[in-house]
Length: 75
Image 1 (cartoon, rainbow, N blue to C red):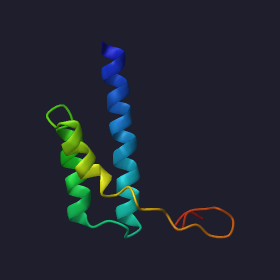
Image 2 (cartoon, helix red, strand yellow):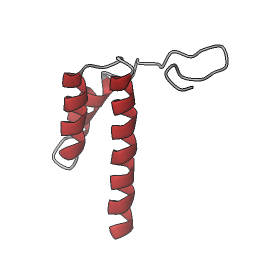
Image 3 (tube, rainbow, N blue to C red):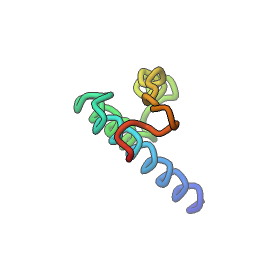
Image 4 (tube, rainbow, N blue to C red):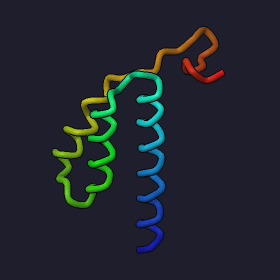
């Protein structure tokens, strides 16, 4: 069971880093980032529908790519 908990925590960290990067790039607002942080903190309390509604609204975001396939902001 500890393995599942640890894997869940690693996934949360990866999600947080990804959304923090979107915020740094100006793709999401501070309020939107806070909503993601809150949802991930309360992951066990949220239904699948609530989680999908919170995180799903960012589904359409795509990082703009330059000609070499690198995300803007990464040199």
